[in-house]
Length: 405
Ligand SMILES: Nc1nc2c(c(=O)[nH]1)N[C@H]1C(S)=C(S)[C@@H](COP(=O)(O)O)O[C@H]1N2
Ligand SMILES: [Mo]
Image (tube, rainbow, N blue to C red; front, top):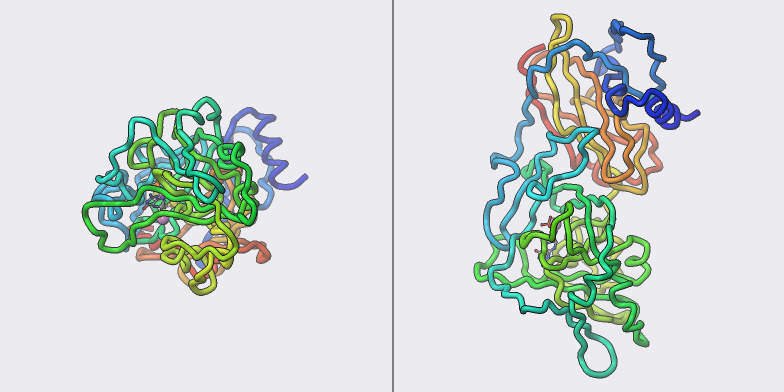
């Protein structure tokens, strides 16, 4: 039995959910020889397989969390700024294997409601690129076909350390598949792609961003990603800042493709130029250079990635212990073989506490820093055949301050 299967078996067999699996594996970090502490357990538990967690914190007291340094000074989960410069950073430190959904009020915001947007009584999406007179698709015609679209993760391609990596959230969405929404039009001759545009005009010019929100997809990309027009988030109608009344969600792709306030769908051909949004986000979505034609853009997919979300400080039998808790997301599937390292120390295997494929899996590592100080934490996939472009360049590096050992 694989480690994952065995873990699932243990979980279901004992009916303890994630609780059984809280624990540590790997022993000491920083290249120190690993010394696993014998843990007094009331009932004999089987030795954890590689990648599984053993609870070394039972009976201990959690003293608090060590702080990540060099990150956002802003309070998390409070919206600030306006229009294209408006943001809200999700506080990922609150994540727990039993609570993997971001509440809608804490879901990250990149661009707040455009002040110039005064919606018509009936929201319409212009359908362009069809032969014959212009056509509108009215949102109220689609609403009866809205269904659950599952838990989907969204990450801004500019999810940086200065944003405390808080431009990353996961929630339950409702909506209608984009291809279903346009099925009655048929694909006109010569059209190979669909351009999705949203309202993007603001009275204040942005300090950093170019207005104009649109992205071009092949029909295959829309089909394979399961792209949908979303109308609801976490059981409530979409809020204004998240794109009400209708926005695009492209599961597995960066947020810059998830156009908010969708007001136009246009059938386009092979020679369609890239949109200003595609040009602006070319490097952040791992394009090679800045292609000028839409057809030269690769799918803006999020690779497998992982980072710590908190470093818990514990007192266990009189000793100070740290538990590094993190997430992994992106890519085709979660891996059960992640490795962590502290500073320039050696790579250590970590164990996974929740194997949820969507939105993210959680992992943890029992860490004994050799001394107080600031440590850089990085992760990698042990399976080097998995594409991890951001992990490869240390994009998700976090530094934590340790004040006591
Ligand atoms: N109309 C419009 N849609 C947009 C944007 C925008 O600026 N304007 N920003 C995009 C980017 S960069 C991201 S990461 C997501 C963020 O969606 P959220 O604010 O609901 O999290 O919306 C995308 N859709
Ligand atoms: Mo973004």
